[in-house]
Length: 316
Image 1 (cartoon, helix red, strand yellow):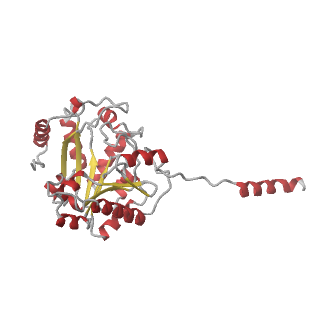
Image 2 (cartoon, rainbow, N blue to C red):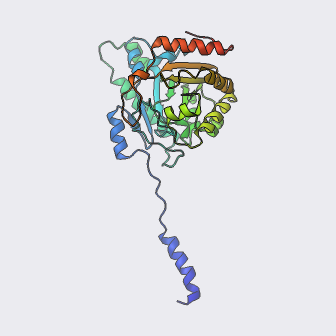
Image 3 (tube, rainbow, N blue to C red):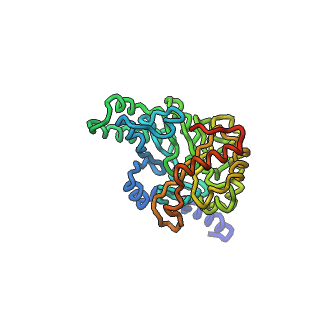
């Protein structure tokens, strides 16, 4: 072979032997074992479904969740799922114990939305069927539970990270299933691009940069800018929107004025305020039982912030 032919020959050899980058699956064997142990039904390579305790309660003729009380949702006909187990935060109060993966961008194999929804409904209905014959379960509620009418996209992770979230939402609506989607306010562009959902939630876990960093433990270095931009994006959605506030005693309950300013920024239709649930220590966080506010303290906080916002009033 002549020297002038050597270059092209080497390039051809490199092309023939080039290794195609392997796109990994989000759910590793270790992660699958951990989440399965916690009761999750894993779907494909990055999704999951789990039965909510309020679904179980309403099948037995007991009370439903707060969405039943305030929005008329039938809890026994609600499916809680996620098309993305991954999240960009590591919140101190996350009851998923941080077994789910974290990341600032989608870098995994992607399943199609049709398969995710089909598998989610199948897994959910199988869990409903397990209640047949269980003492206390109402037959009419069990039959109704086999027809999902609501989907809570709040199980774990960040649902709007999923590249085909708009397709997934449209598929839900096509089957007459309402969509309640919760986002952690770290992906403003995705919020802007999101197709209309029945109710769009943004987690507003703190109202200052320092407390948000302490509570949410975000991965993004520009987390505060992303947070504020997400609230601005929410104000322009032109659909039903909600702020979800989780009060952590001694960490964010004194931030009334700052919270009121964030409300004016995002202009949500509703503000849901709840106290943090203590799920045990560990994982390097300093959350303690002492950080859980009493119900009376949550009510008092709600009254005070309502007094700062003349366009809002207590619903209950």
